[in-house]
Structure formats: C-alpha cells, structure tokens
Image (spheres, rainbow, N blue to C red):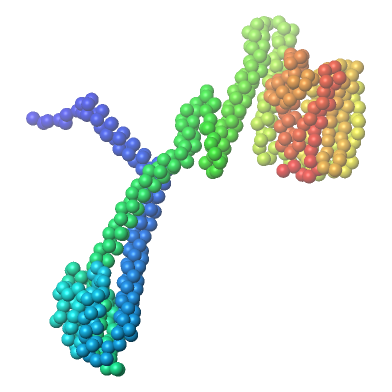
Length: 491
C-alpha cells in the first residue's frame, strides 16, 4: 500500500497564513523609520554609557586618591608641628612623645599610624593591625629599612586590604635617624565606595536611557506623523477621489514635505479634473460631426445631386474634425522643449506681415495702428499663429461695418502686439474663462464656429514664449487682446 500525503485542513491553512502575516508584521515593525531611529538612538546612548562608566570610575578613583594623599599630608604636617612644640631632647623623650601622640590622635576609618624605632616595630594606632601591616609582614619589613621620606601605593594579597597608600617619614633627633613614622590608608573600602557610586550612576543612566528611549519613541512618532499621514493619504487616493490632504503642523523639513505633497496633490487633482473635462468636451465636440456624417450616409440615396450634397456635408464635417484634432495636438505639443524655435525678427517687417495676413481674413475694415522698430528674438511662426487666432476670433465677433486693427510697440523692457476690434465685447466675468479649453463667452455660445480652442492655443503659445496675454473689453464696446513679451530671449 502506498500512502499519500494528507491535504492541509482549512484550520491548518488559516494558521499558516496567520503565522506568516504575524512574521511579516514583525519585519515591518523593524523596517519602520521610527523603529530604526529608536534603535540608532539606543545604540548611541548605550555606547555613551559604555564609555562614560569607565571614565566616571577612573575620575572618582582619582578623587579618592587625592583625598587620601591630602589626609596623609595633613597628618605629617600635624606631626611636625607637635614635634616642634614638644622639642624632645633624647630617645626616651622621643618615644614618650610618639606614645602620647598616638594615644591622642583621632583616627579615620581605614587609617593607621605606625611608629618604628631602631628598625623594630614600636607602636601603632589602632593597635589591631591587619596581617598585611603587622610586624613581620612584607610591608613592615620595607618600612623598617626606610631612610628617606617615601610615598607609595602597593597592592597586597589580603582581600580585606587589597591595597595601601602610605607615606613614611624618617624620625631624626640631632641629625641622627632613630626610627620611621608611617601613615597608612587602606584602599579596599574606598574602592568599594567608588564601585558603589559607579553602580548607582550606572543604574541611573540605565533608567534615564529607558525613559529617554520612551520619550524618543513618542517624539519620533510625532515628528514622523506627516509621513504616516502622507502614506495614509496616498493609500486613500483613488481615481475618483483626489481630495485627501495632510494636515501641516509646525515648521521644518517634514512640514515642507507635507506641504509639498499637498501642493503636488493640488496639481494632480487640477490635472485630473482638466483631463476629465478635456475628454468630456472632446468627446462632445467629436460626437456631433460623427453623428452628422453617419446620419447623412445612412440616408444616402442613388440621386447624383443628393450624393454630391451629402459628400459636401461629409467633407465639411471631416475638415472640422481634422481642424479640431490639429488644435488638440498643438496644445499637447505646447509643453515640449522644441515647441518654439527662436530667431531674430525685425519688428516692423513682422508687424507688416501680420497686417497683410489679417487683411486677407477679416470681412470688415482692417487697419494697422503702429509698427515697432528694432528686433526681437522670438518664434515668428508661433507668434503669427497666435496673432491670426486673435484676428479670426475678432472677425467672428465684429460686424461687417466694424473695425479690426493691429499693431506693435516696444518700450524699455517689453514688446507688445495687439489686436483690437469694435465687436460685441466680453463680459468681465468671462474675460479669464475664455482662455480655457472649449470655453466661450456665455452670451456668445453657439454663435461662432470652432470648438473653443483658439484662445487656449494663444495662451499656450504666449506662455511657451515667456510672455503673457491681456484683454481689455466691455460689452458693446469691442475688445483689445495684447500679447506682451520680454525684450530678452524667451527661455
């Protein structure tokens, strides 16, 4: 019999998914910027504590050593003072002096006074000397042989002592050395006190590290809040909802990032809205000629005259569609670097050419107001295209007995071209809207040909040439459109 593997139960599969999900969450936690900042902060503080503890220990031990040295020096100073006052005259008086001196001296903890006469232990205070200091010890043998003032720090095998700091002062009377006076300090307790102090400091540092880490975790969360808000906003953004924004708080780099993100979303939302409107308007503009063409072709009969009329209508609608597509392509190309080609142009000659072309277009009186002198670096063809669009626009809104005039003028910083007419004019509320794609003045809707892209093309061309468009108009008084360019070459 061949046994096959048992299929996983639904419970096992769910448990496995939960296990891997939990592991992924754990890895995600360690990959977060907030966690990495905290870990770097903890590592830095741990390194600081690791370096500072030995430094603190050494500094405290040095302070203790200096205090011991100062105490010993003071003890030697007191001895010399008392000797000067007592002025012993012989060895017996000197021994009596030291016995009384030891009895009267107030001793500190772990401090010992040792007196040696004739290279033999004489007396000590306290009397119960540790084994490492008692007669017969190595240290006592060293002190018994001293003939010059000596100061030293030694380690001993006795764990209760560990080490000693001593100063040995020879005892002389009338120029002859009779003995040695030794002031001794044990360092074991002092070292224990130092270690205890360092342990307290270490515990305080660890506690402060924990508190500081908690504060750093909370602070980093507040600092990185704009980034999390940005991620949340980005996840909530969809094709139909681009309104999510980040609340900007305070100043600094992250606030700048949040502000930049909001500005980017504003541009994206504006772009999507513009794109949606463009598609809606374009589909509407293309649907009409397609419907007209399809309707006439479906009703096309065998009559040659009828066929000729239908083909004329179809050809006209196709021309309108072609013009509309070309206008849209031009608007798309307006943002490309090679859209304009600069050249040095004579202003007077260019203005004359524009006037002659406009004269062939308009159905009313056409006049040349003024010609600027000098030259300018500009794209001749694009400027001509913009000016002719203005002329066509003026021609559509000016009666046959009206006037269309154009001209140019140059001042210190700019060159201005204009087209003015005596047509129906434009309402103030429409004067900025008409430069948008597919936009028309409200009271002119349906009265003119075209898809409403002419002035949008003018705006795109002038912007590409680093210029600006201005319009001055009043209903019933006509309009004046001006294209203003800097005298310096457009970038």
